[in-house]
Amino acid sequence: MPKVSDDRLAARRREILDGARHCFAEYGYDGATVKRIEESTGLSRGAIFHHFKDKEALFLALAQEDAERMADVAAEAGLVQVMRDVLARPQDFDWLGTRLEIARKLRTDKSFRDAWLGHSADLEKATLDRLERGRASGRLREDVPTEVLVKYLDLVLDGLITRLATGQPTDDLHAVLDLVEESVRVSR
Amino acid sequence: MPKVSDDRLAARRREILDGARHCFAEYGYDGATVKRIEESTGLSRGAIFHHFKDKEALFLALAQEDAERMADVAAEAGLVQVMRDVLARPQDFDWLGTRLEIARKLRTDKSFRDAWLGHSADLEKATLDRLERGRASGRLREDVPTEVLVKYLDLVLDGLITRLATGQPTDDLHAVLDLVEESVRVSR
Image (cartoon, rainbow over all chains, first blue to last red; front, side, top):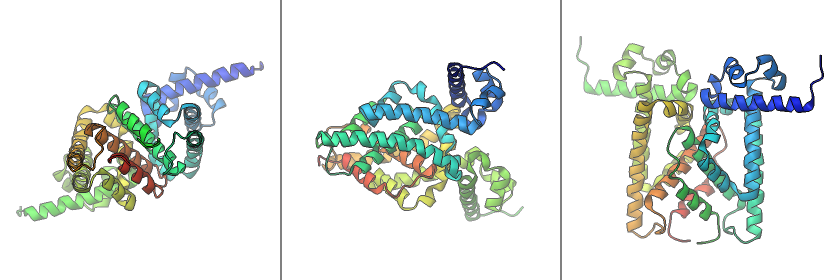
């Protein structure tokens, strides 16, 4: 067997993730069958499951990527900016709708939930750190504990994703996000 | 055939709705097969579909009941109180998790979405009316249009239901709802 370079492996892994993301967005978690993932990645199941143990692992890897990207934005510019990014390019977040379909799985499958919540924890940590910095610089309101503010922003993000995933309009939410942003800041 | 009284019909309808609610909560939308709905209602499919055209109609009737109940509370005490009720008795709202599973259907099935959004409109109207009264009595902040406040509260409710449906803890959300409530009121 020829030795496959690390670059080649990384590129292959990238192809699989991108194809699978489209596939989940289009067909949902259950609808994204192995056959459809083969079609959308242009690769055989052998090649796909060489990189990822199973569909669940592939799905969680995508969730991990998102969480990392969101955590980067949250660390730099805050969770409200993450939400503004979602509003600005809803099509990039299409596949997040799938996370609604896995609600039952999250509720009933402990190891799946643990893996999933591990990613959320990264995002929460990044948000918390940024808020703490905001507090240090006097931008953040003083009368509510930072953890409450994080949970609040998190709840709004969940609402936003749900709204997007159910096909409701989101272009009227910019003013709502202004209100959310303001409500974590020092007194108006 | 003996004539069945209106009371009897109403009681039967009630039985079907209660049984179906449990069935949806336990198995989800797709998992709530006709056979399982028969089991949880203790009635035959003939009896069930005498009252409701199909599973979709049954599901929408339950959504309508919820929307009416929430609209009553929202009209009287506001949408934040609706959310406090959800936090106080999460088990009563178990079945709402199903609404996440139908996200795809909402997104892709226009007539289903129209029926569903019709119920949301009632709740939105009740919330809007209550906010307008709050504005008249000087409790509501003046610097944000009422429609923006309604959308804001609605978004938080969506987040709350999502959190509940994915089995995440909700008992730490009381302080978050205090913040939400305060953020629609006149300046702190």
